[in-house]
Image (cartoon, rainbow, N blue to C red; front, side, top):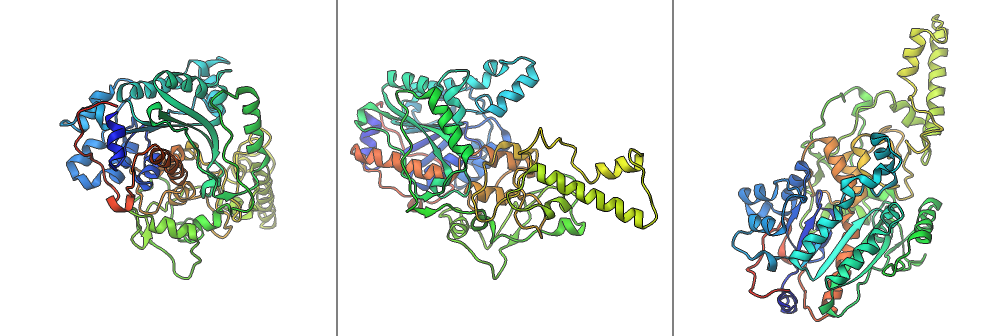
Length: 501
């Protein structure tokens, strides 16, 4: 009971983030008043991003220690914590474990890719990533936190006919936890993105409180695809520990829109002037905020997030080099997808043929010149097979879900401003995920996009962290700390005691 007693004295709850990525969950918990003591992340650049943002205050040596990539499949929890805190007792260090085991095997897009690679219709069942949640549970069993949060894609509720969250709850209950899980959409918590995920909360039975999920703060009538997915999953996979998401209503604030999220950022037109080329895009160029632009409440938060304030401008505002597609982006209307984009491209192609004809050059269909002109004007994808490959953002709506695929291309999020005629930048992707402007990413453009797409939106994480904090307080734990009172970029831990959970 030592951990509960320590929290009851008003000490700050200490968090270990597993499969942390760049730290979306940790940022939310830090902002809600938790202390971030460490993480486990195998991707080297994501690990460096995490250390840069949460452990810089400990000096270069401590930051480098936390920046090391760590493979949870071969790293025992005691060894991890002894490496980070050699003078502490591992079993006493961690009050809360959070994390999102890799979701590729659970997501339908991941299943399709696995079938393609393995040539077997049920290859996704054999993906070792699908059992990484067992390592999460191993860390829980050894470290005995008082609270647990796990995140994953909705499809985990129906993984090859199995309800994985319910199975996890069954295991956690045997380990002494009270558990609930549900589906939450980030858009209902002030994130300018319609991103639905499964969240599972477990609380130590000794706390004598039931898990709760945060009430919605924002409202939008979700598009049919989101509600249909939720209904389909619930029909086949409702488990004993599943709870309905907290109800929202139209009396709440309107959902944050794309324009509110990114409309105050610097305009990018260098690509239209021939000033952008191929090659890695560094994230080190500073761009000041433009003058005389509307700055929404959301944008002000992104500029002034406590502990992650910007310095009058942004970094990471870089985009992809896509010269073939700029004219197509310009002609697309907000909300249009790949079939419409393909039609726009064919229009442009026909106009080019007509211009050449008027200039005296007649190009025969099927000729080498014809094929070259087609290839440099029209995307090669079949619009019937890839209807959702492209999408132009709607300025007065939240964005659709950002995924790790944006590390390969960002056609799913084309900027709504036709005068800019481009896909979103790294910083704009971060804004759509609710990462503040003072949160910096390691690596170049593509790795940064992957880190952002994989992350839990920090604003949603903060809302969930707030409910967990309230549960601890309800149990008698006087956790009255705030992120502002302890500063950002802070790792480390206080001296542990001598008794167990």
